[in-house]
Image 1 (cartoon, protein in one colour):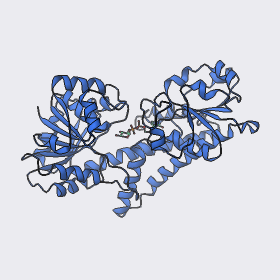
Image 2: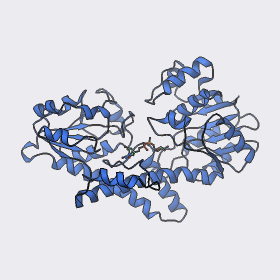
Image 3: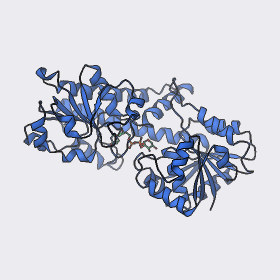
Image 4: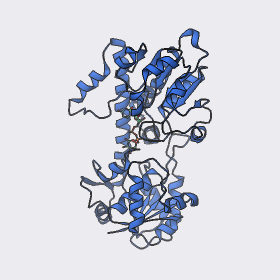
Length: 431
Ligand code: UDX
């Protein structure tokens, strides 16, 4: 087994470190945030990731997983050094590499001979060369090993991946990194670093394109009177299309797709290719936010304009507590901007949770502690995140406590016959 340093303990770094320790490696995770390191050392996992707390606890008990402050402390005795630091979107759309460069410069003087530095964060094409330059160590190989983790299922995605991608022109370094995954049953492909980085961006951009396509098809279905659920079901039987990632919604979001899709368009532009298709994918997504917001505004009967809208769901998808680039928030910003009042409930967002104010400071809505508190006196009700608990709502009770009787289901979560049987008008997406 190997000794691995993990630099950065966000959902990628913490998941990578905990899973590598579960695979038997000796792992030291480093973060700059002393309070966060202290919480992790006590086994307190600050993010919602299914199974992660169990793996962290297992790793601490087995002595295979440690947490320290500062990248140098982790890297001075490790053989592999995983860079899992944020690569946020810069003002021009390109990824901001300052955290990556800082981490590389911090460890360059403590790396043991023949160490391997691994880029796990999503980094622009060509970043492996940037890290190698910052390190300035000819004895140290730099390898790309992009992550394909979805929030909420990151542990499962790491331990049962569809593939492991390794980008290196140094075959010996590539083989050493591949050996870290020897207990994982998945294809391991080795390519050059630029191709590995491009696989990551192209995969995310393709998935976002698939979602924009299905949202556009949903709009077409509304125009021609088709049922998008049947349309995507019929499409998905074709193995070349597949059943996954065909659920229409209010638009797509999260901390990756918007950032990575814009970054790829910028990478292409800087390389001399005007990636118009990708810009249209982003535009279709923005249009979906607009279209969903307009549906909600239209759901308020004229005489009820002074009543609020009950919004169910704030996170960017069900199964996570992440509010970054949430489609729900994008839509509600538009609804509030049109002068409507909103009371919102989300099972992963507590009433006194200040994250919403931090991530979206100009969103003026009231967050309440349960769906019925949101629905009391509401002109209409909208579902923006596909939390399973919203399928079990008491629609008889909702009919009693709401003033209006319109429901907008932006995730096609409900069986329309259930609210309709209780006197509600129901509007979904593409049906
Ligand atoms: C994504 C990629 O899936 C993952 O491989 C990559 O490593 C990181 O980015 P994540 O951002 O966690 O993962 O979310 P994902 O599950 O892909 O959903 C992204 C957005 O698309 C969400 O807003 C989600 O609600 C939306 N979505 C997803 C749909 O609207 N319909 C679908 O069918 C699937």
